[in-house]
Image (cartoon, rainbow, N blue to C red; front, top):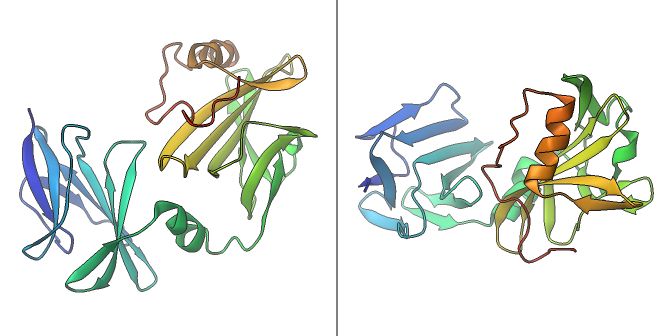
Length: 238
């Protein structure tokens, strides 16, 4: 059983934490081995108490965007919890979806569909070697509303805020599309892999995706498991 710690949101240092302040806009608090974050405090006042029967958080980030300060507690890899500073003595819970749209992606003025079949287009995707194949990372300057491959939709865009889109292409022209997104249905991060089967983009079991990706790049572990959720339990398409 890990020991409980309290973290004061304005702290510059904290007992039993390692604080990394190299980037003033993202100060990282990591609980030392054997400890977990149980409470967040503003001065002496308790801001939030973690249900440690469900979560064992060990990392928090204090994020600065222009004049705004946020505290992000990683309840787990998949589940962020966010607070915004209103005044020295008051912080309030803030929707992570709203944070993505209004803060993190503030400069992305446009929202549109992404056609992942255009993975070779410079400015839209950036290529990188991936074993014998290549991986293309979405780098376009717009918010992705839906992911398509030519005229076929990949995955279910309902309640999804896409944080990354990758297209893995093998030497045999086999393609795997990976979608990383924040799902507003349960406010958790997902990482899902798709492959074209019989003219439709099929959601792969992780073991199937690993097999295909390992065939392209043997450095990809056959037992790889995402640290976040594998799919949206509320949006399963069979």
